[in-house]
Length: 328
Ligand code: GAL
Image 1: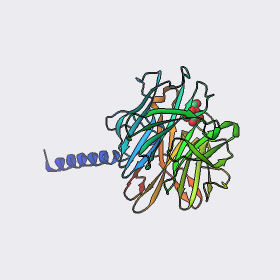
Image 2: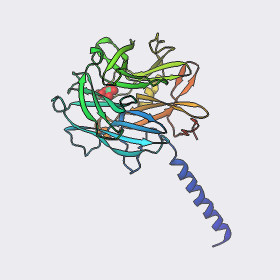
Image 3: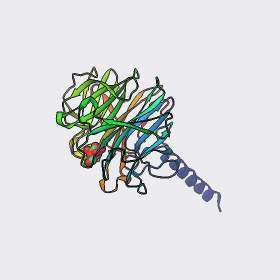
Image 4: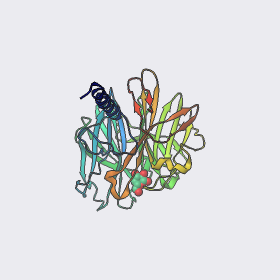
């Protein structure tokens, strides 16, 4: 083989290796997202818990081979938010309240209580047809231990369907829950043991679900989706200088015709790095006929003054040390 040919082959091999290395450091919204085992990440309608330098992702595990009578929550961890290590199914629960076939256990969110040193999971528990409208709590001594069922209740005695979680910069935890009869949703603080809500902090008069809250640059943002079941709709947000409000009018997070790029809000992740702070939109692109293959839309949000913009999904990367995000 001539030296020239050898050089060309070497160049091609190195370029391919580089491209491959780069591609493995990308988050690819809407594509299949595999864990360290090469399996689809099962963390739908999920929540993120940030502990020291690790992120734990909990969500509905809709694996096809799951026992259809049970409901499952899977737990993953990551240090870079890109590569996720599967831990285990931390919940594999049989119908805890005799709700019947088709009972609902959705949108799990885990809080860590530094006082009791317990991990507390909130979840939307419902009867078939979504009539019960409660939250359920489960606890564990370790982040990826088996979460033990505690009880179910209606927070603030209100109907509660989709839930969200928010931990403010001072560590105060809040539950966000949609309450249909009130045509709006609540933000409530948690009791000292985190096993109940303590008090209503805000009521946002807008019939929205998939509620998520973020606090950045002295401003609170609340984000939610309209009530269209698994079908996507144009998600909207409002701002306030205090969590208690008053909240601004709702604005579109993306061009409305894009239907939030076929996704529904689930949470907002704040990544505070050495150089900057980024906020990631986390949405679910549901596939109701094959929920196990529902996809995730993660994109860094563009934040300017008081506006939020969800850019068109495309591959991107993040450096959790600096907080910087890049769209190559
Ligand atoms: C959505 C909700 C999902 C799931 C679905 C069922 O509105 O956000 O979590 O409950 O409805 O139709």
